[in-house]
Amino acid sequence: MEGDEIEGEEFGFSRNYFLAKELKGSKKSTRKLSDIEIVDEQDLRAAASSIEPKHENEVVALLNGYKKLYPKWVFDLRCGFGLLMYGFGSKKALLEDFASAALTECAVFVINGYLQSINMKKALLMLAEVLWDQLKTTRRTPRNLPKFQQFSSQSVDELLTFLDESHGEGDDCFVCVIIHNIDGPGLRDSETQQYLARLASCSNIRIIASIDHINAPLLWDKKMVHTQFKWCWYHVPTFAPYKVEGIFFPVILAHGGMTQNAKTAAIVLQSLTPNAQSVFKVLADYQLAHPDEEGMPVNNLYAICRERFLVSSQLTLNSHLTEFKDHELVKTRRHSDGQDCLFIPLPTEALEKLLSELT
Image 1: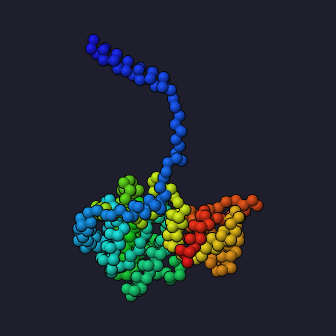
Image 2: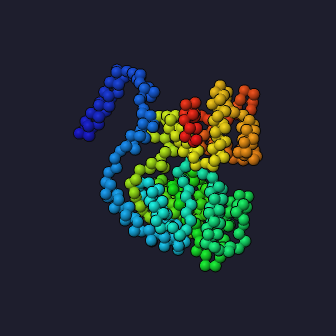
Image 3: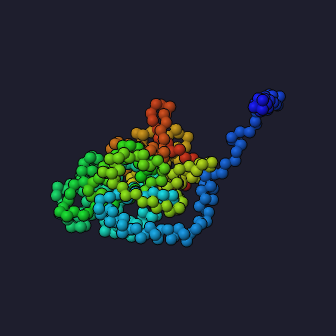
């Protein structure tokens, strides 16, 4: 009987609740998402950068403890293993300090995986040139080594073969590749990870990488981990802010102001070649001189760049444009006459500021 009474009370409570909701009626809120005052991204980043760090003494003691591991890390590299650093906080400064303090006897090549897109072919080409220079400075007499000018015409497989082949007896000459955020957006796809695994297995290459994403180990299979990367895992939390790594990502609950977009574009352009920057300036100057037009026709851009000896062929220009589009520096839209036009998605004031920073 008591159970029936309890069930009856619960039923009566729920019935009364819904009856009250019906009598009250449904009222639509007049509030809108657009009414929310969201802080500008630049202001939010400035406020975040002004936050005073805490526990400085403890962090310094922690980093000094990591420095005692430098000899062990060098030993692991000489034994053919790769180093994988994980833990909370940016590890960029730690890896760069390790390179400058302990890797003075070999060449060091840095890949910033936190960038939005990375050209692996270009990275391998530059790696081959670095190894070639190191072989020359150590006064070796390498066998069947291609000339410096020939690297640019080689395929990815040929470059990997060169990085893997032996160039002398008792060969201990290798290049250390530091990859900040090997799990970053520019390196996260399966094809790029396969290239990195093949690179790590080359006899003249040693990989030192950092990860921050919780699912980063899912990027690799058992073969890649144990026979190609050959990781030695090190838990090295630094509790350092991700200042450099986070600049390319929008801040949550913040407006992406045009000033911040121009600042990000300037950082990306400074990482490109001088010729690529000059091509971008040609497009920017045209856009500022013709503000009422829909954009600059591709043929006009090619003609001007060819006249100024910035590009040698349409293929070269297309490679620059692809890089611009990957970084969202340039966009394409259809002109009224049917031809494709290029434009920079920045207002006049921001574009003028961007050009002044480049010069």
